[in-house]
Image (tube, rainbow, N blue to C red):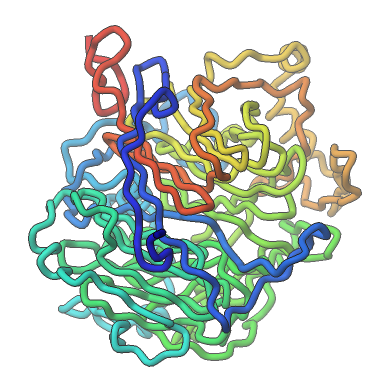
Length: 597
């Protein structure tokens, strides 16, 4: 008789030839697989509309299984490999106003591999240097006054989710020995928060009982599509988690006390589903959520919601992007607004299409945003200003991430490609071919990155995990690129061309045959560039170092930890792959990924 799908997870330890990954540094081995219980649709659940004409039955909104990994102990496993390089006497060519970053091993306090943005932010804010990155909204007196003095005791949400009578929450299932398990757990162990359809689970991956969730929440009419953990406020007795739902509601959840608060309740500020959500680096209370109408909204977990009106639509006259929907990059409400007593703290209209993902840069200054309109946008979110627009080769972008040193951006999307973009050179570096369907997640492996070489991974709807090794020196330059570079740098030509003053506005044709969209910008601007699609003949191609089908279902998430790689799929399978202990020559691999002699 099958186990109840709504309550019971299944832990397996598969064996056989399909449970290993052969890479240059050695063999990765599948340690275990957790199959999360998938709750059936609630009778009151609202199904999501679909544009697929072949679908004949209603489809519930879903994002597959996404994970947030955190070590509650601030002195956790991962080192801080990266630091701000304030030495301007270097030979690197960088865009105006941009800082460069170098990599180092640090003996300072380390944190989980998913926490680099917040860690760097915390260090920058405590260095006291004039070159330190300011906090978001730091200069707004109204925002500081609204927040009041710092509380001596860390604040928690007020409502008990276990005893809640809210119609939004269907059922809460805490572990019967929750207190005992928390007291006996490994202080440096790894927690995982996972969503699957209308369920949200809290797992202890360092426990022998990892398949048994510490707590599980079932929602009534909404699916949790995204979530994030605040690495600045976490400790052994407190974790702040924010969850974004298909109904637009956002939950601030503290699992230790099982308390919660509801933000944007019933769509008070924005009634569209939340596609992605992240805590703002170095902030204890502010987080950023992307809604599926193409807006980014900054919320404060401790503020009440209230209807708001745009202070003033601040259209950047020299920084305008127009697509077929006639949408403009607008600051609807600025973080510098004097009205900061209620949410939202800030609101930006980025696109007329769904925003699929965004990520903060390690320098805690830039924001990379990808959307269904096929554009990667780089925003200086501290100044609330658009910097760069990069189009995909074809279709929409689905995922994005930064290299740990902040020099490169990875994107994956509907063109089946992983693309590498250089922030400093402001151009595409390479297209990575290997997937045979949409790329759904990309991530760097910080334990195998140094100042010259990078390891990253990608997963997709083709059920494959791909690993890639990348360095600028190893890339083969196509002949067309070599000829162009003999005449001058591609990036330099692009900037020079766009800076030729031919009028207040220049029209740049899109170099793709599938669209008639036009892009507009100021050719004299030193800040913003539109980058047309680079032809294949001019773009380096990068093959994977490992490609393998690891699941029977489309993959949707990928994460790197010190001792393993973790993947998840649409149907609830979470797989953990142990790293090889030694390199191919028998030499130990150090923490930074460089072999010791």
